[in-house]
Length: 345
Image 1 (cartoon, rainbow, N blue to C red):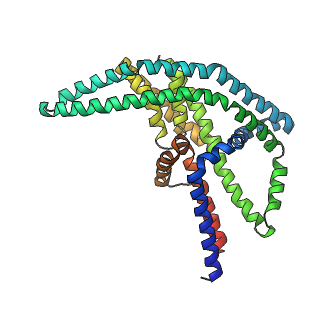
Image 2: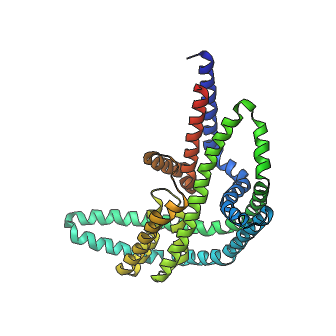
Image 3: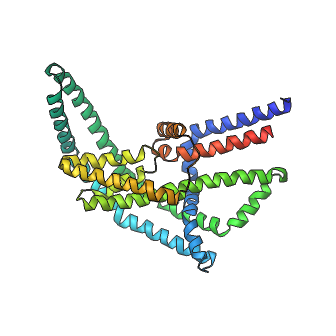
């Protein structure tokens, strides 16, 4: 291999490693600073199908954007006025009944162990379960209180959302002009290859935002309706958890079902069975109809890489790491492959 090529590989590798280090070190700060633009890009991707729908009916692009954004603003105000107060009320009520919920589950578990374990092991197992339940109860209450504290912060981000809407309007309105000006930044020799690479990144973002997020919203609504039908309390809050959790690959549907099933168990085993049925039916609906129709393809990652991305992302960046780790890893894969091809020719 020529020396010049080795130098290129070294320089590009150093740049990639530097970017990865900066992302890990200052990732949260960068996300906070860029939040309005990130929101604007997400809104842009979510509105693209709606704008195309209006444009096909001979409505001008500007008017199509304004109609689509009016719908988004209406949804935001509906959430602020109706859903958030209900969710806050649900969380407050759950915090009050958590000791009873844990007590009920604890007694049921002890009865099961007493019937199936030898007497000499019972006391030590009971002590371990008791300690585990105390820690779990404390963490659950602390987590729910943190959700309540997040609600004012969520309301405060309305300004970021409004700025994001303005940015999204200009991105959608001047999309062709933005692409044209971006092309001029890059050397003519590499222009086509760079834009081919950017199209690949665009496809990943499109699949994730238009796919996973739209499916999560639909699933959240269906699960809420299903939980209402089977007579579950806190249906909106539990349906919201189910929908949001569905964005997380592999683990999401199970994580989302746990709170609803645990609360249902404190009512009756029959109620828990009904709740499990709701989540199973909705998941089958997702697997058979929603995902094939909306996403139309995967992000091109092996299941092991997907699972590890979720685990590492969650450890490093919490909830946002769980949600965005997979599409970011898919984008990194595209970048590495493209850089390798450019270096090796």
